[in-house]
Amino acid sequence: MSSDTIRDGAAASSSDTYSLIGRGLRIGSAVLASALVVGLSACGDSDEAALEGSQHQSSQAPSAVASTAAIRDNLAQLAADTAALKKASQTLIAKETVSEETRKIAQQAEPIFAEEESQLVKTLGVDVDPSETKLDTATMTRLENEEGPHADMAYLTLMEGSLDKMLGQWEELEKHGGNDLQELARSSQQQLEDIQQALEKRMQY
Image (cartoon, rainbow, N blue to C red):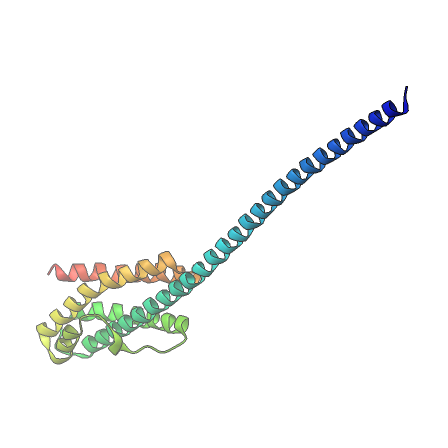
């Protein structure tokens, strides 16, 4: 074999080797680039998921605050309404010209309203103002000014319209409040229903 043949063979072998190395580098580069794309995509998905989670948490926080504020507002309103009915019951009891049947209802209702008001004040941590009530204040005024059957009717009308509303308020608090509030709501509903039954019997006369 001539020296030219040997050189040509060596050159060809070297060329093939470089070709294989180049092809390997190209393949390796392609794999690396693909891995980088996948990695960056995964990072992007992770960042997006983290952002969505953060946004979800931040959206939940105001919602929780709003829910707590709404419950407190409902408690405050219920406390004012309860205090107003307690005062109305005391007004009726103090009148000497009303019927004994209506007086008995007021005597049954007054301590219940007093107890519920006390529990609500304890829960809220502040005193309540009966003047903040959203019940029928016109009928309350009539109760204060009237005597005899007119005072009877004013009290019965006030109670009839107010008890349904207050039972609805307690039902909402039972649904959305904590365990302690749910227990208070159930107890209060039962007592108000007892007053309601006595009122229905009285209205049948």
